[in-house]
Length: 171
Image (cartoon, rainbow, N blue to C red; front, side):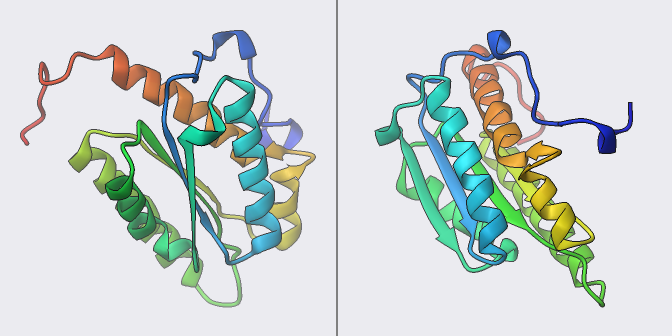
């Protein structure tokens, strides 16, 4: 089924590990605040729903999506996180700026994940219009913040299940 025809945030709750002893970072872009704050609320509520303690969820805001990797690195340096979730929205405009920003953010978070061995979750919407953004921030296509939270819990659990130092990829 095409993704445009379903709610992408639906998932089997019974498959999500308990997040009670995990520590989360959430970095939220202030640009497109109506959208990003809806993503944040979906993310935060989902973490708590699956057992995350509010006192173990650390949140910072950054000016725009481009600053998400730097904000994530700073927050990771300030707190002992299991995983860091980055939430933003870059709406295509009259220029190709969105391509440069989205690529830079994706590459930055990938680099942080590989270099640190810790998951940095890409929760950035890349829609063509504001309407599409709202449809994915709690509208008819679900909430990407929920998906980012579920991904974070699963990745933190995966990291914890893998013995440290047994596998290296050249670093």
